[in-house]
Image (cartoon, rainbow, N blue to C red):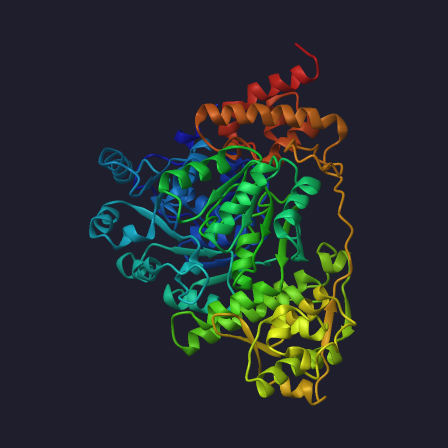
Amino acid sequence: MADLTETARPADPFPSPSPTPDAAGSEALGCLRRVFGYDAFRGDQEAIIEHVVAGGDALVLMPTGGGKSLCYQIPALVRPGVGVVVSPLIALMQDQVDALRALGVRAGFLNSTQDADERRMVEAEFLAGELDLLYLAPERLRVESSLRLLDRGKISLFAIDEAHCVAQWGHDFRPDYLALSALHERWPDVPRIALTATATEATHTEIASRLKLQDARHFVASFDRPNIQYRIAPKNDPKKQLLELLRTEHAGDAGVVYCLSRKSVEDTAHFLAQHGIDALPYHAGLDAGTRAANQARFLREDGVVVVATIAFGMGIDKPDVRFVAHLDLPKSVEGYYQETGRAGRDGLPSTAWLAYGLQDVVQQRKMIDGSEGDDAHRRRLAAHLDAMLALCETVECRRVRLLAYFGQASGPCGNCDTCLTPAETWDGTVASQKFLSAVYRLARERRQKFGAGQIIDILLGKKTAKVVQHDHDGLTVFGIGTELSVAQWRGVVRQLLAQGLLAVEGDYGTLVLTEASGEVLGGRREVRLRSEPERPARASAKSGGSGSGSGKRAAPVDLPAEAVPVFEALRAWRAATAKEQGVPAYVIFHDATLREIATAAPASLDALAGVSGVGESKLAKHGERILELLAEMRGEE
């Protein structure tokens, strides 16, 4: 079988003009099957690819795991020249290039991690037309020498990945992305395709404007990720809650845990490691070598958990991340969607879990009040937080609320916590009046402001040292709230903050009334509150409910019993092969491909070639060994 480094595209840097749309469609489908090992395109992929192959500009909004990369990789293989991909994280370029080379695609990158000789070699390959794809960081396109290099070669297209980075008030703004609007001015005949997995209608409009893609064809896919189960739990010792989740549902699985602060990252990673979880920290305070080593272990080994600030994750291509957990409230729905989207890129069942409490709301409000920027900026931040709080407090399907934020209608999903265990609501008007009255009495009668804890003690009639010191047991509201527990009162406060009926003020998180508070105190507004029923601990079929915390991987529940040992043998072979080659395991094969091999048990190369994800190059490299392994598992010679 011919090596794909020779067959992906002729080495001639100036071949014939771009194919017609019909020919492009046929050639693109052939490339999909031959190089990537898939039989058919998904969703809008075919239309996007045909449009770009024909020379058109495109703006693509497609969820993580939806196959965005194929939308520029295949046109780069079909069109004459080299596809230039602008990618924001240089730390991941090596793995992206390794994955393409494993498919027989001639890929390279230029970034600051290379020495002069390595850069010269890649530049020579680019000028000779010996590359199919060249990855660049956005800052390199602000360097004149890089622009002159591109001028001397033949460019088939520009792909701008993570295009939401151009949105100035987005959650991942990168100033270097603003310069990418000049691409069309310098290379007017080269098609551009900008792609993102995260964009509201406002961000969509901003991307089009800043990259001058208003006249491009826009493709907006559904943002639904049906394989992800969204769950938001009341925060109650979140590290222990997280440990329970990992032990009962994700033993031995790869995952990402997000925390707001570096200290929380370190504490959580240490806690998990103490309890037998292979957990590593990742944040900007670590030295570059430690960050790179921890990221490499996560990408290249199975079952590693990374505990990180939001500095970790963009561009992560690891397909078998089985869970993403948040121990602190994300600042926006866009950030939450982007981060949770790193789970289940292979389409297999995955979990997005968030622990959320009163202190999260107080902390986020304080951060907004103290943020740099003008009032308009703070209003934008507050609007982002309000949408995130609405998602947390909803009694409706979380997926419906999440998709509505991105302007997409849907019905109840049956695969989120509010669908699986519907939340109840109660008339919290009287309770809200009691709490707001306590805030009012403190401010009016004592000229004092306090946080939630002191006010709850007053309502519960607790004569603590602080209550007695300030003579708060003499207030008329003292002891009028004994019908609710401390936890229930904290839920009331959290939801009053979320609904804008209370506000946070100052460095100490004291509570004050808002304009809307008067409507509740005056009896002109009803307050409905969410009451979350006690949820029994989930004993996952995947882990058999084991709480050992040993980190031992449980048998996948979506495989027939007889296929499980075959799958595990294939995973062990993949891990050894990946380690030998110095690449992530998923570069060899995705879990989904190994599952299909284990289930179908092909006995010939032709049968193996029919498995999704087995292209010509991987069949040639690994086919014989896989057949040998399957024969060994069957007890054959």
